[in-house]
Amino acid sequence: MRDQNTGPGSVDARLAARLGELRTERGWSLEELARRTGVSRSTLSRLERGELSPTAALLGRLCTVHERTMSRLLLEVEAEPPQLVPAERQTVWRDERSGFVCRSVSPPHTGLRGEIIEGTLDAGAVIAYENPPVPGLEQHVWVLEGTVEITVSDTVHSVRAGDCLRFRLRGPSRFHCPGPDRVRYALMIVLP
Image (cartoon, rainbow, N blue to C red):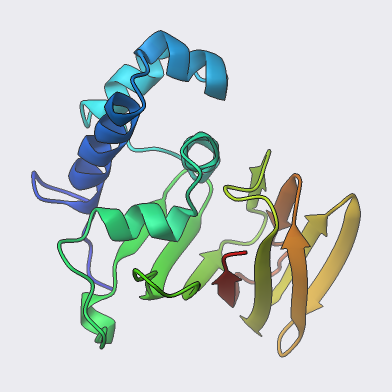
């Protein structure tokens, strides 16, 4: 995977600019966004200035208030999505703190409701989302390597290599890689 997270034209820099645009489009001040997300004003300000790379959890909160999936937000920082996305051109985003890597394999596109993401989580890593970015979002998680514990609607599902878990997301969710190895999975998202 090539690293697209550093430098002035990086994914993080474009993401910071887009998050600022989304807040401005809604007419929200930093204080209002802080109130809606529970994230401090100073953290949001540093994020929008590109001084801070968001964690998966923080990006999940921002996606929720802006009513977008994470991959849709990442698509918005790309110039124009092509029909064919060669592996070397797929957007990759890393959350070094949690050990989560997100590859937008089949990014969202205007007029289409589905997308595919490849996710990897290091052993012991946990990602928790307080709310779905879009209520009723349909998700299919197909584990390619390892095991992941996914909590949806207070039910923990242990999903192993070859297994597929499918559900509609209406509340909090949690992904945990119990180890001993990392987990790699394909996440298919379908907008309601």
